[in-house]
Length: 114
Length: 116
Image (cartoon, rainbow over the protein chains, first blue to last red):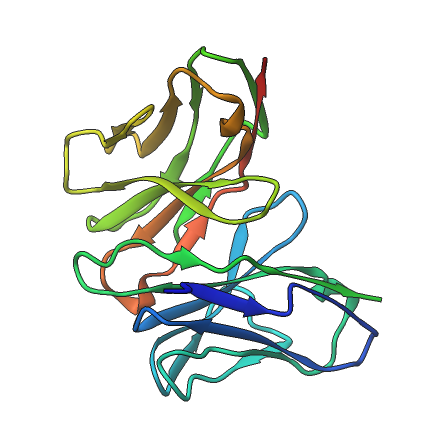
């Protein structure tokens, strides 16, 4: 299994540009998450999904959108990039159920908005 | 809302010594899980240890153990026989039981330095 994969690894955007951060998992996990990590801080939840077709907002959803058309993929869309969105973005997945406690994280995408 | 607090932004330890990282949390839930994650310079988030709130016994994983004090809402991580590879940022995290997506709430992290 490749686990959780994210692309791209790095990206520089200009203010007002748009982009999609890709996330995929091959573990057939129901739950998927997007977090952002600002410098020297912990991770904050942007959006999450409990299954295909179901998404919900986390702590910091403004400026982002997500979709979950398949179990495997959970892309994060930035429509109008702002400097405040400069951060490292992590995607994670979890199986769910009483034994599915662990979240598996992708390697992260470092995004800079100038 | 649940909160997680790590009061030690930085800690250091000599190689082969023991260090304890502190974490407190606030919740009104009875069913929850607690985790310690390690983030080395590669940025990869690595699960170190987890504790189910309903279990009274403290979790252990090789050199890593926790001191879970449910009444005090405290969840500290002890690293024994510290190794250079233990140097990383450590995050304490909380998760409710199997409801509402069960997302993680993270503390601000503790940067651990291991001195040779």
